[in-house]
Amino acid sequence: MKPSQIQILLAGLLVDVVSSQAPKCPDYSIYSKSRHEPFSSGKHALSSARPAPSCRTFNSTTVETLLSNMTLALADPDLYRLFENTYPNTLDTAIRWRGHAADNRAEELAFIITGDIDAMWLRDSANQLQSYLALVEPDPAAANQPDSIASLYRGVINLQARYLLTAPFCNSFQPPPESGIPPASNPAAASDIVFPTYDKSAVFECKYELDSLAAFLQLSTDYYETTHDADFFGKFLWLEALQAVLETAKSMTAPTYDPDTGAVLPSAYTFTRQTTRSTETMANDGLGSPVRETGMIRSAFRPSDDATMLQFLVPANMMFARYLGSAKLIVDALADRAPAGLADEMAAFSTSIREAVTKHGIVPVVSTNGSGVETVYAYEVDGYGGAVVMDDANLPSLLAAPLSGDLSNIDPVYVRTRARLLSADGNPYFMKGSVLDAIGGPHAGPGMAWPMASIVRILTSNDDEEIVRVLRELIGSTDGLGLMHESVNSNNASQWTRQWFSWANGLFGQMILDLRVRKPHILQQSFQ
Ligand SMILES: *[C@@H]1O[C@H](CO)[C@@H](O)[C@H](O)[C@H]1NC(C)=O
Ligand SMILES: *[C@@H]1O[C@H](CO)[C@@H](O)[C@H](O)[C@H]1NC(C)=O
Ligand SMILES: *[C@@H]1O[C@H](CO)[C@@H](O)[C@H](O)[C@H]1NC(C)=O
Ligand SMILES: *[C@@H]1O[C@H](CO)[C@@H](O)[C@H](O)[C@H]1NC(C)=O
Image (tube, rainbow, N blue to C red; front, side, top):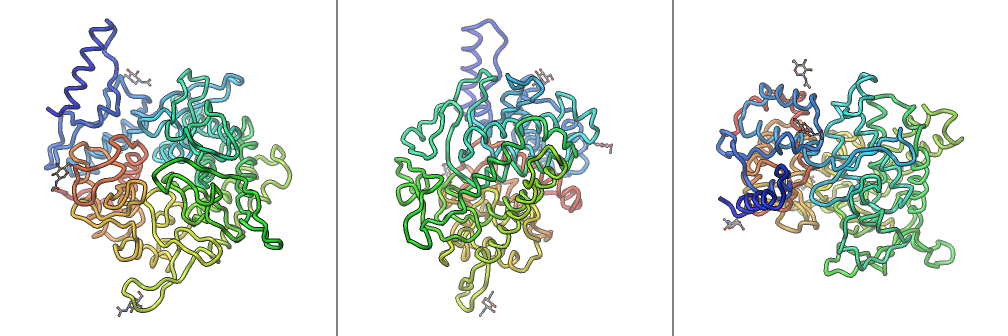
């Protein structure tokens, strides 16, 4: 028995001794650290990692039907177990609270956590729901039910809108007061000096990340394109939040210096933190490295929550432009209820960002073999010719660009960029190893490969050999726990970070559902 299992037993006994109530549900951050029977029958003997039905945070009969349907589609017992554990993980464990706004009982709210912190990230919650997009009820009567996946979407969109109106530069937020859940403390942020200032009872952390703004547009687009429910977007705070997003993004297109006078311009956002990690604070007393005006939008932090080295983060600009263009269609559908000129402004901004990405985001680099030069997408640029050529596992990434239709996976610049990013000679954050060959990032550091990047590699590949190889690595990467970790030592599966990372779990499930359509024969094969 592992020590953590003894702890659970002791914790259970204590609960029984101090109260005569039914034993409480185990804390999932502890539960997910140990293995639970029955194990899968394959060589990896994977844990049964779903919480007991009475401890699940959201019940969906559609998901349960899908899980049983997939027993035929997935021939390998370890792969099936991994799907069964991971796909429902957000619903099983991370729907922390659902309810209605205190000032409007018609306004649904849903507070979704990523894992062991009682805080909601804009990016993570949008991605967590994306795993269930295909299950949003097409029938309006079903979609209006309070226990529907559609209701969960509406609740997250409404809460994100509230958050964006509260503090549009921030990335992670506290539980809504209606939930009665106390705000989480964030010791890491104690020394932060952030402009604009924010209220710690509403905000968990205030790192300005362009992709957090894009996440709201993505979530809204996903819901609208699936339900065509334009009416919902006219009812609550969505239009106001959308305008806050636009205003925030536009303020961050400004350069560092006034081009005429050379004076340093005031920045709409600055951030410093006392820390020993360079990725946790911004250079130049919170301004970041200088940028020239390019038409791209600055991002202080990356989707990993690490500071950017150069502020024009290319994949976040691609994502923002892409979902600004699609969110415009919602504004079109709202017709008179939307402010005049808003849709046109969105379309023009989307186009100008795309043009700037093409002009400034593609850079020449020396080929990895040392002879000749090739052009690839940079991860970050500054408008001065400076470029950071790498990729980070977190989404949005360059590798993932085809997933949202930012780029085609046969676009020649993407194909070259992808080959470089998946090479230990071309990407300083590509981790090579016997367990997992995958992109990582500074967040978990060198040597730590991210399963999320392997999942994205499969989702962006048409090559059966590549898909099978990477899938085999993922199945062997869980240390027997049967869940996707945040990162894994590329040479030792028993060294990993984060036992409970519901976003990566959902993404694994989404990838299996994608393979069921694109490559069903691969799911019929054995991985033993
Ligand atoms: C889910 O269903 C189980 C019964 O199978 C129940 O005990 C549990 O409370 C339900 N969870 C929610 C969030 O309704
Ligand atoms: C499960 O399979 C049945 C029969 O093929 C199908 O009608 C149903 O739509 C499937 N449900 C889900 C959620 O996949
Ligand atoms: C080096 O790489 C470039 C670009 O991929 C290629 O065109 C060239 O043929 C390669 N040269 C050698 C010697 O392999
Ligand atoms: C892998 O990591 C575990 C846990 O840190 C350690 O006990 C083990 O010795 C490592 N294995 C190898 C081959 O280094």
